[in-house]
Image (cartoon, rainbow, N blue to C red):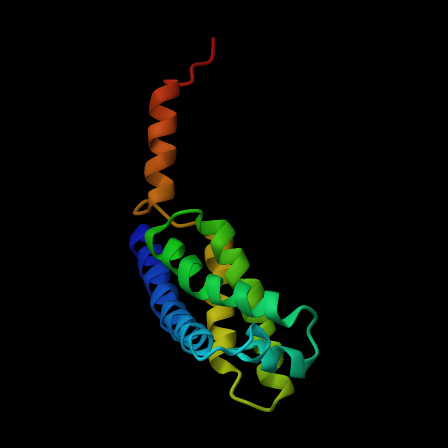
Amino acid sequence: MIYSGLLLLRAAGFLLAFTFGIQKIGWYVTGLHAGKPFSSIGLTPLIAHVGFPLPVILALWITLNESIGAFFIGIGFLSRFAAASVAVGMIGALYTSVRLGEDWLRAALYLIIFIGLTFTGPGRFSVDHLLQSRKTNRSGPITNH
């Protein structure tokens, strides 16, 4: 039963983050197609306004977190690493929302989901579990003599 709960938690994290990740990719495609520099596209101006360092790099990292990272979380591949990376991004989103006086609840909920997945891992229904099972089966059972 717990594995179904982890699958549901991963699916919720995937859907929520992936939706925003695809949106951010769209911003970059549209902006670059229009000939705009990276420094004026997507989250970069907001990140610079809030005062975080390296706004272009952070904006690209957030976009990758919320698209590819969300996909990895959804399928349960490199789950703990991806969830930890997205959680760090959500800390930044939470800080930014609070600092700008915007609704911070969504960022806080995502943060809780991804911190939980960082600690629990993906569960049985995941690529990580499948890869671990194959690795264990190849090395054979461990016996104590």
